[in-house]
Amino acid sequence: MTSPVLVTGGTGRLGKLVVAQLADDGCAVRVLARHHRPVLPGVEFFPADLRTGQGVEPAVTGAAAIIHCATSTRGDAQATRNLVAAAARAGSAHLLYVSIVGIDRIATWGYPKAKLEAEQIVAGSGLPWTILRVTQFYDYCLANARKLSRLPVAPVPAGFIVQPVDPRDVAVRLAELARGRPAGRAADLAGPQVTNWTELLRGYLTASHRRRLVVPLRIPGTRAVRDGALLPPPGHTAGARTWEQFLVSQLGAAPKPRLSPA
Image 1 (cartoon, rainbow, N blue to C red):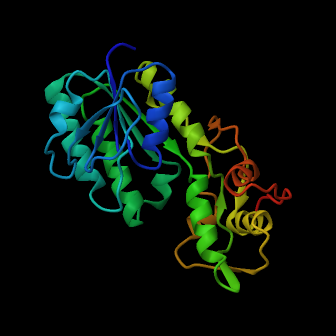
Image 2 (cartoon, rainbow, N blue to C red):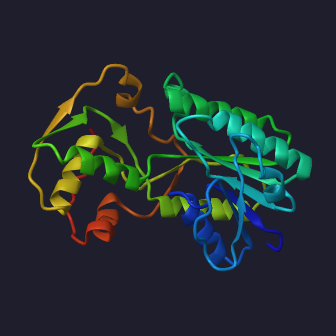
C-alpha cells in the first residue's frame, strides 16, 4: 500500500499496536491524536481534535484508509461525525471503525449507546467502510483484576460471561482489513476462550501469587451479559493468545489453567 493509512488515537492502548503492526507490514502510517507523543520512526504525526474537527482534514487528505481507534467515554458519536465529514470532503478513503461485540444488546448503557450511534454514522457515511466488533481487551481485564485484588475480599460481577481478546490480535486483524477491500460488517473478533469474571480474577490471583476470597455479586441490570450478550456470534474470528499466555507476558509467571464457562 503506497498511500498512507491514518490511525486515529494512534498513541492510545489499541492505536499504538495498530501503528506498529502497519509499520511492520511496510505501510506508510499517519497518526492523529490530540496531544503529541513519541511515535515510531517514519510515522507522520498530525495533532488534531476530533471533538471539534480542528486539524482533522489535513490528516485524512490523501489517506488510503482510516482506522478509527480514538474513543472516549464521552463524545464518540460527535467525534465520528467530524471524522466522517472531513474524510468525505477529502475523498473516498476506506473507513474502519472498531466497535464492541454484542453492542445491540447493551445499548441502554451510556458508552455502548454512543458506540452504536457511531457505527450508524460510519455505515451511513457514503464512504467505503468496515466495522470490526471486538470483545473486551485482556489489558482492560488485567487493570480491573488489579483493582479488585487490592481488597481482602474481592467482589466480582456474578455470571459475567465473556470471551476477551488480546489487543495485539485486534491490531493484526485491523491491519489486514485496512489492506483489503471494504467489508461492511466484518466477522466479529474474540479471544480463543469463553470464561467469566470470577475465573479471570482467579487466574490473575494465581499468576500474581496472591490469596483473596473471591465473592461473585449479582449486579442489577446485567441480565443481558449473564445471558451471553458479550459473546461473539457463530462465524466469528478467534484470536490466538490466551488469558494465561497474556498473564505470563505481563507478570512473568505461568498460572494454572482455570478458565471455564460460568
